[in-house]
Length: 119
Image 1: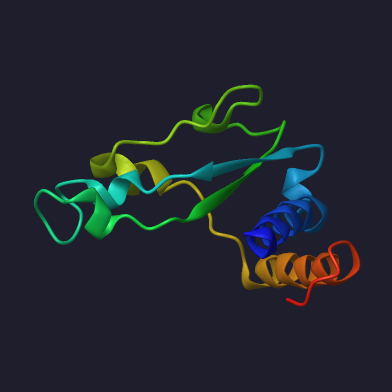
Image 2 (image 1 turned 120 degrees about the vertical axis):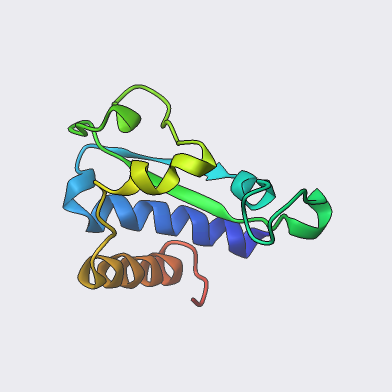
């Protein structure tokens, strides 16, 4: 649990440092797996939570300059219903390979220097 905490903290810190689009921003941390339990998610049909949930943590970069109504500064993020997830996401772009590598490199450096942990 300690190592996981270090990883989460270092990654959030790295995102703020490595991604210019988050300049002056913050990170929201959110553990949720609700869509895995949706009846329309594979396998289709009702799910027993214990069999289909898995812990995963979302690190949500927040920018004071966001123009998306779902990501307004000073408000909680708004996520769509399961059925609307693809149309909601159509205007967003995933991080580039370069951006991902910058976050990973900075995370590794922080784990070594700030947390004295090996990535």
